[in-house]
Image 1 (cartoon, helix red, strand yellow):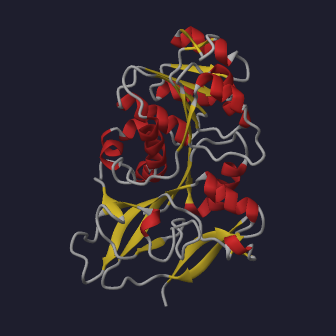
Image 2: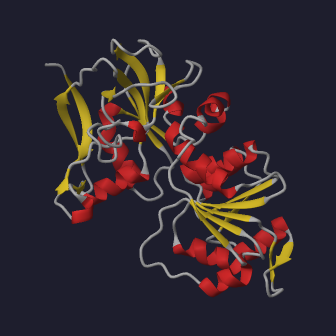
Image 3: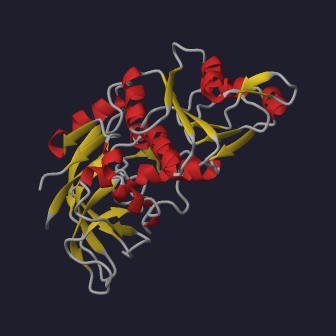
Length: 347
């Protein structure tokens, strides 16, 4: 029996690297050798929980989770009935297409493993092929960049819009890149970590704001001009606010700053118990738009990720070999220590 190493949740805040049986593809499946896999905030959430409930809606006991839903790799085995993939193809994955559950999010398989079974493999449905001009670790950004792209699509931002993105993590910076590639005239990124703001400028943001040190409303007015809310009170001319931070202060700042008809797109996971000023929303007729996942974007982003891969590569702060995967997760779980960690697998 051939085995492989796979990462799953262990004790609270820890991972276990376990040896499990290497899957064997059926007639409609392919086996993918993982060459890179990103670590996401969702993985960290599972670690903090020490797993996930066996039956979440019933409050069941916690069970280990095979983590990793941002893999990139190459096909090493192809089922007899698969006709559009071949050994050696370099692919990224749609984690949500697996019939045995979402890859890395409670499904049978996790992408932070040496191999991954792609069930019912189909190009542009379960996988997308990318060229060898793109490093595997950059291709592994495909899934989070699909999240960022959906957020931008939900914003419906146009060239003349003035946008501010709160949070210079991978999703926020990815949104900034997509906004600029979309032709949006002016994109501001706000964060509290200077190194992240430097990176925001490097990937093409027009301006940055350190929200821990600067007056957000005053700076946005300086950058986007002055407008007003429905009562005629002065407000910045910012058209769209994107929350990729998930902090209550972002929502409150937006409500306090929003002009008449502004829009807030919420892509970050919000903390429970946050209180919002509904009256302030009313005074600006602020539209709140929620953005979840990537209903259509998972492979729509792949060609542009390929075309602009050097720009997206700047989002990766740390490349850590699989032999040091414990340190990679510790790095991700340490606030402010890393922006985007990608685990790489040996040739």
